[in-house]
Length: 168
Image: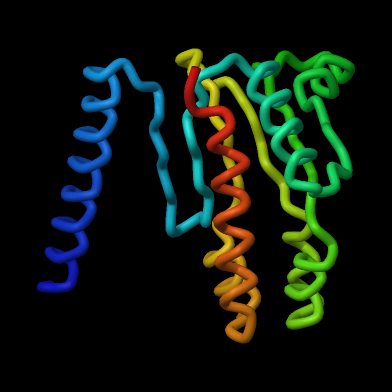
């Protein structure tokens, strides 16, 4: 019972903190909101731009860092071809093979999460989000403990790329 109370209180405090930070951003005219979901391992950062501009900014930053852009998938266009309406959604697949393959050599199943995938989409409220999988979550998912420095570097690079869509 005490553990359940602790979990409820922790969840309430997290929700309050997220609402407070979102309110502060609005009060200061900022559009930056970052949400991390430890259960799903998804990090979401609100973009200050529309989907097209966000994608272009991310691609420009990926190229500037010398990272390989393997593919850009317009999921809304694919849905439209199937006769399904989907709000704008674009998946970028990119990576740095010398870094990414270190995870796969630690556990071949980590290849499910490499190369990196970053999704840009517009939600029902009109907000544009940049989302990617948390690298600490990937490490835990695949039981990789021997590559901490590499996971940290990957986390910093992904956050840096996503930050290119934060401000005007």
